[in-house]
Length: 249
Image (cartoon, rainbow, N blue to C red; front, side, top):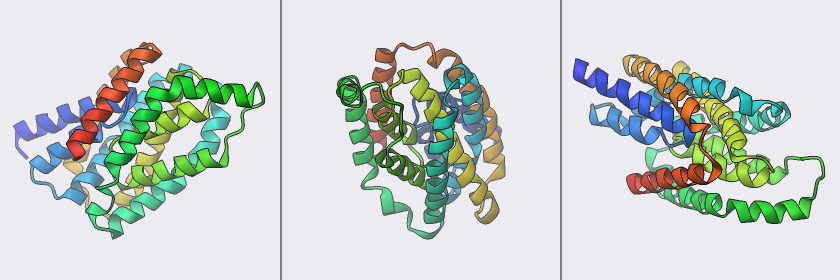
């Protein structure tokens, strides 16, 4: 690996770490960079997943104030995420890489529509459920499980999908939902990355560079991203999602 390649992978890790914490879809930066430098698709995907784990941890630490009082949610949704991530990682190692390619842009587009409609939909849901004690519905758990499968398999825009699902399912501020998203997406990367580290071929030098970049990027993303009001944050989510769809197509 040349110095130029190393610096490019490090920079991509930093950008991906920041974007993952604020919105999601950081994989769409690091994954193409690894492909451009000659890594095989599965090796690039596996190495990218492991490398972004420290950035997710840095982001979760940065959002610790918004995570206060969400322990019960985290415990419940983490189980669905963990099961999904393990399933997705297994699928990546057994199915052809093109298996999900045609439906991923549809998932992202649906998530963006939900993000845009979230304020009105949340108001309607709030009127129906009243002030009753929050209970996470089976449909929400199923949807989080599916995003975990997707996160374990590939993961690009997993954060956007989670934001769309959680912002509708939970009656809470968007930044608190984003903090919860960071924990769940990071957990999906951690578990699938652990599986990959045990049984798949990993490009460890690339992992190290992405990890270093993602830590600084995740910390910066948390520092500045958590200050965004709901409307600009929602606009940023949609912009990144549109770019993700274009890149995937």
